[in-house]
Amino acid sequence: MTFSIVKKNISVVIINDLLKRYNCPVPFHQFRTILIGFIISPIKSMPPLEIIKKIWGGKLPNFENIDQLSSFMNDVFMSYWNNLTDHRNSKLPFYFSPIKIKESDKSLSDLCRIRREEIGGLLFGLMSGDENNEFSQTIQKSIAHLEEIWGYFEATYDLIQKNGIGKNQKEISNMTFLLKDMEKIAQIEINELINNCAIENHTKH
Image (tube, rainbow, N blue to C red):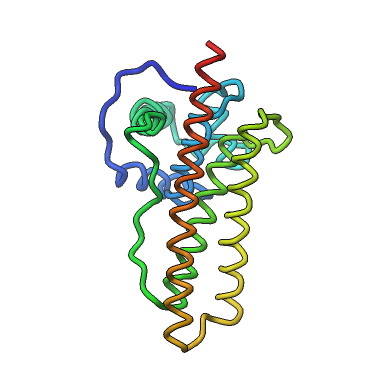
């Protein structure tokens, strides 16, 4: 799924400001991966306005006039969307949003929450917001792997929120190492999914 419109670079700050202005129900890092999911999805293309409705819970943001709507769609779909399509090129792989990690309960729980939201957003977009959509065995395998990783981040987040990591420096360092390692695995799985979807989309045309 893509738009045949001339690409222009647009600052993520502008997109983030738009999401805040129109009360986007998901944070920027998750919005980004939702769009990537829609971009790579082998499911039939969805109109841009329908994508926005999916993200905003079934309705459009509260635009005051047609000019606001046009400006929003131009910035998000004629600019930022096309920037994100670069990740379909294996030479420009997907990376998670950068996070400064400290060995503390808050920092590591934030890491788990954000990675969980990013993976969940990607899968939401990939499935076009409908878990009943069917995929090839190759894509299903990638989805299953990412769901397992999502579950790991979810469980670890809940554990840290409930009990904390503890005061033992070795335990904290081990947890930090494991989470960073899981990040790397998740990025590998996501880029493999992107490549497999690109292959399937190519064979359809």
